[in-house]
Amino acid sequence: MEGDTGTDTLYLQLHKLSAINSEQALDNILTTLWSTRKTGLRSAEKSHVQSLLNLPSPGQVDPVVASLRSLIRKCVRENFTSDDLLKLFPPDLSLDLQSNLILLLQKHQKQWKEESSREQPLSGTSVSYHVKMSAAPSFRPFLSSVIATPLWPHQDDPFTNFNHNDLGASASVIADTNVAPLAPMPLLRDGSPPGNMVSEF
Image (cartoon, rainbow, N blue to C red):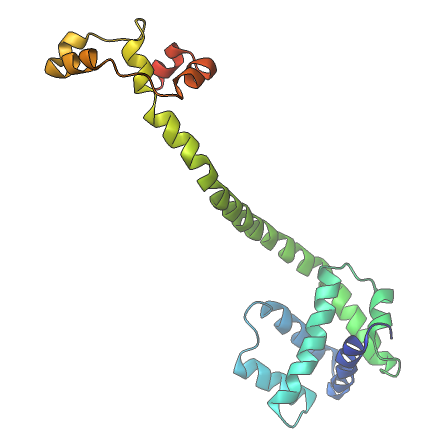
């Protein structure tokens, strides 16, 4: 068995699977662990696994479950083959148990990988959404300046100007004040012709 001490200790828990007397019972445990990979075992499921393993206390179930979940993850995410898995097993683990574990993990590997791949786009969408949201504020000042300034060039532009007489008193106030255009005005004219600015409104 290869790996660090923590991993070695984890897979020593596989010895406790020797208490299981049928391949079907082991298969049920593996499929239960896969179906509860996001929620964890409920108390009834944990009690069932405890009885199958013939363990005296519920606390002894957790390390066995952790080692099996680790094997499942390696099959699904890391594409472990039977040879890769054999290297993880304790050297004195019974050959029957090793064989059953490998057969069952390979039996479900394709289905589990498909189910896992269907879950990936959901997480990808969530990440990209957060990235876009975090980037949004950097564009706000630019957008607000563009929206705030287009009215200034329109007042002095003979091609886009409407009839100030239609505005009554407010037109004379605008005409008499001789307000200088805002500084961003030349940038707006360089990047966007007056005709385009009119069409946007």
